[in-house]
Length: 189
Image (cartoon, rainbow, N blue to C red; front, side, top):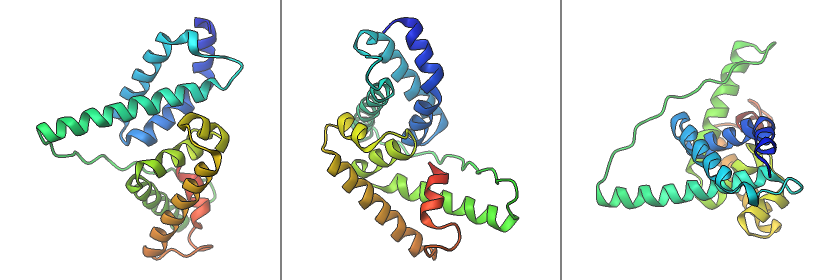
C-alpha cells in the first residue's frame, strides 16, 4: 500500500477505527493514545496492508493487539506498584429530534446501562461485541481477525446479548418497553 492509499484509507475508515478504540479503551484520552499507536504501527507495516482485502480489519486487528499488550503491561505494573483508577466522565447521548424529554432520558439511561454492563463483560465477549457494533465488522471478519471460527463469534455475541439483556431486566427494563434492549444496544455502539 502506498502512503496516498493509506491516507485515503484513514479518511474513509479513520472515524470508525477511532470509535472502536473509544469503546475498547473506555476514555477519550486512552482511545486517542491507542488510535495513535495503531496508526503508527500501521505506517510501519504499510507493505503488509492489502487494499484488495479488508484494510479496516487489518487496522482493527492491530488495535486489538496493541490494546491487549497494553493491558498486560498495565497488569504487570499494577502488581508491582498498585494505582487506583480514575472515574471517567459520563458522556450524554444527544436526544433525537421529536423525542419527548422522558423518552430522551430513558434512552440515555438505557444506553449508559448497556455501556456500563458491556465494559463488565469478560474480554473474550466484550471484544467481539465492540467489533460487531462499533467497528461494524461482519461475523466472518471478526472470526478471521481473532483467529476463531465464525460459529464461536456468533456464540460469543449471543452470550453477550443474553448477559446484557439479563442485566437490563435486573434494572427493571422489559423487552419492548423503554426502548427495548435491541434498540438501545444499537444506539450505544
